[in-house]
Image: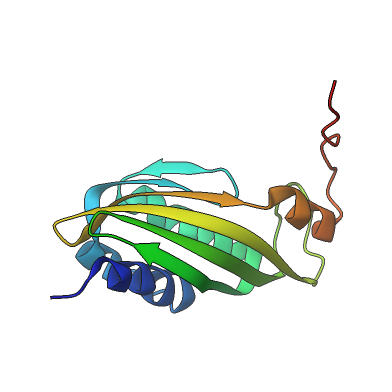
Length: 142
């Protein structure tokens, strides 16, 4: 029986990197809850796959690389790197042809060897800077 780490590896390698969307039915629950590194939220496999397709449309050769992972039977956390070639509109910026990369942290919850939910935080400001998009004002204390 595969462990919870295998689900995370399949999620990124099969669904995201190889775009094998059929794998989603095998490893995700039907009501899979997703919050992506760019801030979008979805519920259900079809909505998640539509989001994945939109990312691939904006970023050619999109890749998710697991840098580090810790897991128990229910929760998995992964430190991630996301990369792609900017070929379509993203954050209001038309294609630049630049290769972009940003860091992220992914938090999975699994049950009965299927992924129930995923919450991903990403360095959106760093990505926007690479694209030349308008940046938010920097944090200032006090």
